[in-house]
Image (cartoon, rainbow, N blue to C red; front, side, top):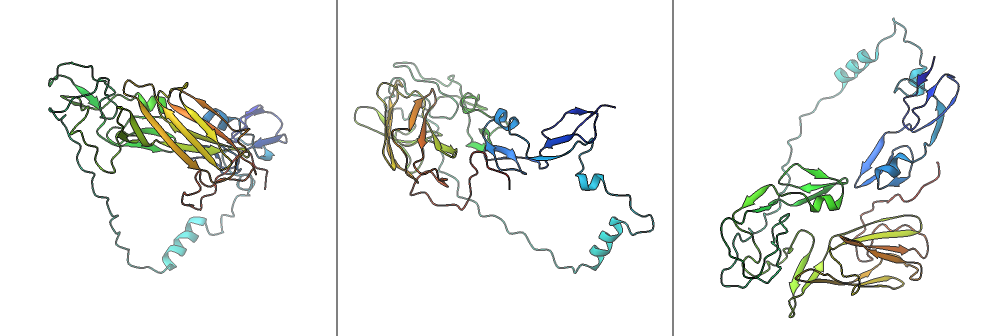
Length: 331
């Protein structure tokens, strides 16, 4: 009779119980955006790539989720002590101790409150976007201000956890960064907040991805933008998240152990991100490439020595974490 194998990665319908089954004996692992199986080393970023990871173990088909050694185990003798009774004896004989009193975790001081009103004596630049997260409404020169503007925004902080993205103020979560940028706000305020008091708080970001200072020509000079990276055995792929990068004016320069960026935007009120990134390892500038997308710059750094990078920048603190890259052999 035909039966369906329940081993992860197999799922075949079989009639021969001695047929070879290729499967994953370990559970799936999803951690910080990476996906794979606990029983083998390949780690990928997308779910489609996860489904294509080849099984790592050969065995026999099964119709249960039990490991083979448990499936084949003979039934216990009725006169032998049961596992439950053995556990009960072990618990009774174990020494007891007083429970530890949990210590409360230290909490960070709350950030200073954001100004809820624009300073009426200051002029709002044409095209200035509302500073509240998730609003994205731009000011039009000469428009009348009132309490009926209805600013729909997110008062909470962005949350990025194990591939999901959202805000602390509401429960909605998405997987793609473009979807995150389109999440509709969960709170409505009477007025938009275009400039606030007109002064940037020290140490506070101008928006949810970057800190900025204004230049003399009205251009915002960004001090930092959100970025992340992953790697393969030969390449480090880095994303710098900045919307509306001007492809004609942007420059990306590859050095042996540096990445030099000058990224102006085409916003109504233009922004500019300039930085030099000291790289952890050496690269081959001739083989390194980049592409500018709607919401980010994606850079592919070709490793000169093929070694693993635990961090992106040479001045980043080493965490001791070992990043799995590519497809490793069996051990």
